[in-house]
Length: 220
Ligand SMILES: Nc1ncnc2c1ncn2[C@@H]1O[C@H](COP(=O)(O)OP(=O)(O)OP(=O)(O)O)[C@@H](O)[C@H]1O
Ligand SMILES: [Mg+2]
Image 1 (cartoon, protein in one colour):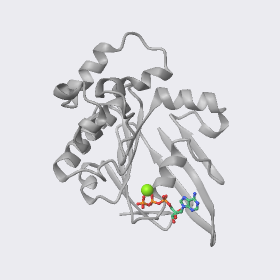
Image 2: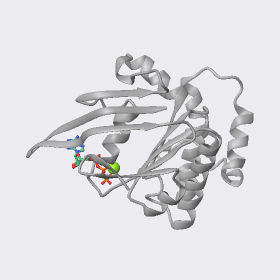
Image 3: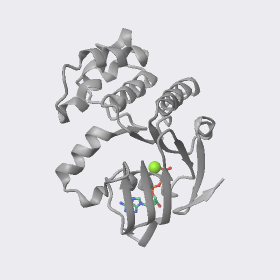
């Protein structure tokens, strides 16, 4: 599903070059939930964005779904591939503030031509425990409900891969476990999850754990 070969990414900072990814190689198959742990600044978010086709590496290869190098596609092809095959979950939810739970879950549809989506939306609302809140806008939700809405949106198009960057960073332990469990269920159903975090608990839900340090991956 995800393949990285010798990927390196440097940033130009005010004090010179920062090597955020240093010769990273990695392969992730369907049915895997890979959790990458590491301290702040070790390169986790950079790794996620590079693997997801959102940040071009300086060198090395990225391959998604066994076929695409996302950086060989033009911007339009790349966003269609993302919309159809990839879901994202972030620490800050990134919900649209003036849309309800139901409407937020539906937004991935805007980029694809799908049939009547009401049934799918309703099923997700129920699966993610949002039945009583489906007409609320994000400011009328708890943080756990916001992240569950973001998760329902991430899985709406039945993507093969979910990329998650600190998805439990703003949640209490109970809600964090609910979110991790949903991600694990999605993996059990055949999806792949690449999750980067410094939350130790996430490792309990992983099928594989790697540690990241100074832009490099280490086996745990
Ligand atoms: N646009 C940028 N310009 C310069 N340096 C950057 C840029 N983006 C990230 N960095 C640096 O690259 C390194 C890796 O950043 P990254 O955001 O990937 O870390 P992280 O592991 O996700 O940290 P956190 O756990 O705090 O989110 C950091 O040292 C950061 O300061
Ligand atoms: Mg980060």
